[in-house]
Image (cartoon, rainbow, N blue to C red; front, side):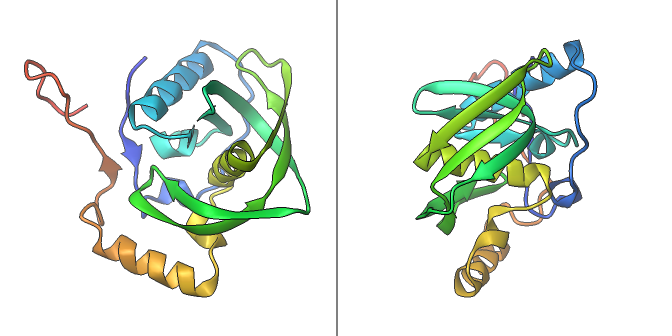
Amino acid sequence: MAIRPIRLFGDPVLRTPAEPVVDFDKELRNLIRDLTETMIDAPGSGLAAPQLGVSLRVFTYHVDGVTGHLVNPSLDLSEETQDGNEGCLSIPDLSFPCTRALRVVAKGFNEHGEPVELEGSEVLARCVQHETDHLDGILFVDRLDREQRKAALRAIRQAEWAGQAVRVKQSPHATFGAAL
């Protein structure tokens, strides 16, 4: 279990649809722990496996004090929508207004392959849609209207992290000083 580097905008893994999970084994459980630890450390509301360079259909979330994960999700979205600012750990320090479904019912599996159903609205619905998009090779900037997308891409090009492959945080412990 470890905090791992997060892949940044421009990394091809973020644009590649992830493969379904077929083995619910120790490796999957370790990946879910790494996703959770990395997400909480970042901090973020969600993190998908492709953001760690792993092309599998799994994500974690931490919304309203509830932490969980979903493997091989499928979504049923409400027709009613919500507007709000959205950001992404793979597009650090930037957020833009994005329209999403107001409610979601997500079906999938837990780390042991047992069926799970997750229902949510507002922030949880936004998070589940955002992370499932990552599994499909879609980034939230793809969902922006034309003007906001142009502004987002301009801001990404000007960001200090632009052109980097991963975001690595420095350890806060002086004795460890190396990049994590």
